[in-house]
Length: 233
Image (tube, rainbow, N blue to C red; front, side):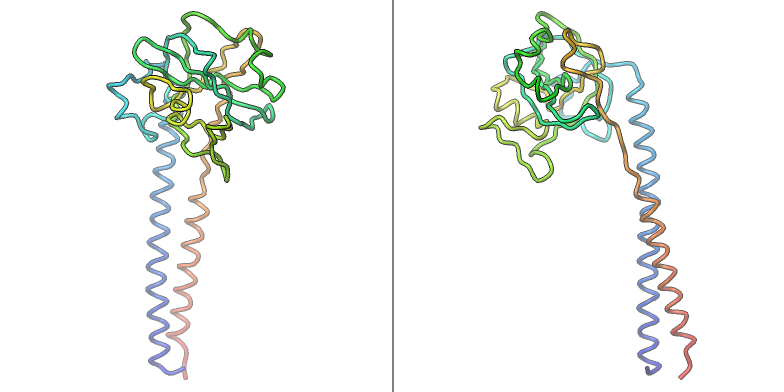
């Protein structure tokens, strides 16, 4: 290898090392952001509940600032317009029961909880169809548009794989509906179904692995550049 070619490869290795180091630093910053987010979500989950945001505050609702915030709302369930969304939980496979709650000012979709497949038919859990005004407390969740992994929601056939607020509201012909839904807490329902309080809050932290990977590749590039500079013809 000529000195010129060796110098060119060494320079390329140095440039690569700089880029890899920048990626490592970026992952460190991302990891710090993720830890801040986890701390914020943990604080929301354990904070006293606040009123569910009304129409005046809908534009400001977002995942970063509001996801998993404890909220409360009072209204009347529209059980005849419930939607079953396929789910897999610690209790096995079944469905989320998403029911509109008609409040004085707007409609709010409530994920009342989980039912197994043998309880799909509403008649098998009629005791849980509470009538009259109720107060629901739970966690604010952002909409899940589109569907699940490799499966799209099909409103025409009533097959739902995600809690798509806009899609469900349109399919059920609901009035002014909040752009978010609420996972009901573990307060028991009459008859035992649906089973609430099954929200899973989990944040995977891959940033440390990515950080170590980028810095390891950076070190390898630097070693390669150093070896090239030391080679004698």
